[in-house]
Length: 176
Figure (cartoon, rainbow, N blue to C red):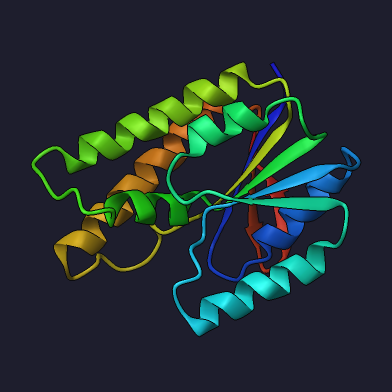
């Protein structure tokens, strides 16, 4: 099993930049597994800035939903794989149209599939996620569900990963 690393932090804390720098220690070629979907001009611009910042050592693979399957498919093809980000992946899973009584259970089952995939990887994997549980309680059901799922997912993935960092104001702190 290869080393797995979880990097968490608040919005715009510097966690993606730290994750990219962390991954470059493995050498090229590197894979950036993007879960974002370019649904508007602002997101298009963010994605373009990230690509320019990363440079030519990186190959980008876009996958908004089938994260465990895509990681398995990419295993062994790169020196390291950076997944950015878990919270956008959770959002994509929540918004794909399944609103039933067990929506939460279905999403957590996907997180557990991801954790199992991480344990079987031969390529180092770095995961980026957002810490969303330190703010106010969301007013709406979907916001509360998302916050709860993000917290559960972070706990499952942190327990699975070999290393865990949080980034605050651009400063990484090793937790595990």
